[in-house]
Image (spheres, rainbow, N blue to C red):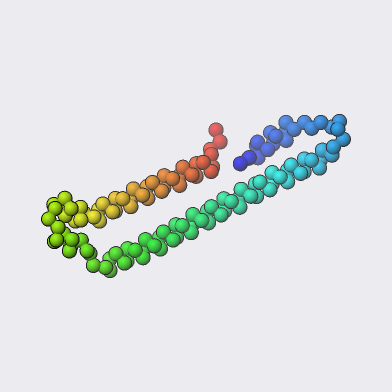
Length: 128
């Protein structure tokens, strides 16, 4: 995205040829309208991306709450599986499934946060 300083530099360095009879002001206005159109399109696209991110966040929160309520209301099938299995490794995994799934959820959230931060850096590069 072009910023105002770059636009000022472009206009300062713009030296049109005046010998061919073209209307310079009309040409400059047409180019400025094109720049404005691109800026409006990018602003609209950023607004849509932000709206989509807000909707995805809200849907994730609602689904997480609903699934947590359902998970707390349903009986745990791990007790039945623990009684019927003879493998100590499988019993250990089943008994600690909450910790395993919780750590996987935390890792997925960290991965998603990292992806969002890297996408934000690509969309808004810092001027050096």
